[in-house]
Amino acid sequence: MKRILLLVIWFCFSQNTVAQTIKVSKRVSEDSIYLDFINPFYAPMEMNLYPLDSTKSIIKVNSYGILKYNDTLKNALVIPINKIKDTTKISVKPFISFKANFGDPNNIIDENYRYSLPYPIGEKYKIVQSFGGKFSHNKPHSKYAIDFGTKVGDTITAVRDGIVFFVKEDSKEHCRTRKCVDKGNKVLILHNDGTMAHYVHLDFEGAIVEVGDTVEVGQPIAISGMTGFTTTPHLHLVIYKSGGISIPFYFKGQKRKKLRQGKYYRRLH
Image (cartoon, rainbow, N blue to C red):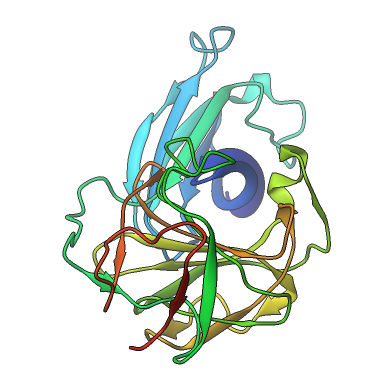
């Protein structure tokens, strides 16, 4: 017997820990249940599974895999059937801890690429916080983020060609503490060198694109808002490599590589 079901599993990606849904294929044999994990995202995913001390003697774990879109980690978890009360409802939490990050660590990043500013040509915005900002750009996932002082309702454009692999636009909440970090609306886009752009703090229902869309540089992708962990409306832009690590990135036509906090920048290209 083989069934496809959905399990909600906690995993880390990029700037915070969120609940995401992955596909799980379940196969039941005479004495065991076999769970295959399937990556439903257009971005590759690096998975790590760790058996719990209390269960490692009774289960089998395929502990590591790098999965492209729709790839499968076969026999990710094998559980004796006598350890499951109801085979129609299986939770993996009693058996393993699970961590995954978007991205493939084997990708070679194009360090010479120059991005476009994330708004229409002719517009200019103030940099609220740049690389290494003291307020919140001080950890590996945020060190190389840039905050643009947009207003609610402003148009956000793609800084580079890519494919949309995640959209969140259901939040109306914001606050001044990290308890709201998961409330930020966002659009995530995968680039051809494996890097990923995160556009965060977007408006409620503010995504112009959908998952699976291919976008071109300069294309409108979202409406700026004020959602998540923020004290003022702005766009939080960060480029990630695999492992949820932010990386430095630079823009076309700028004499200084690093955009300076407090300075306005007009998009000319």
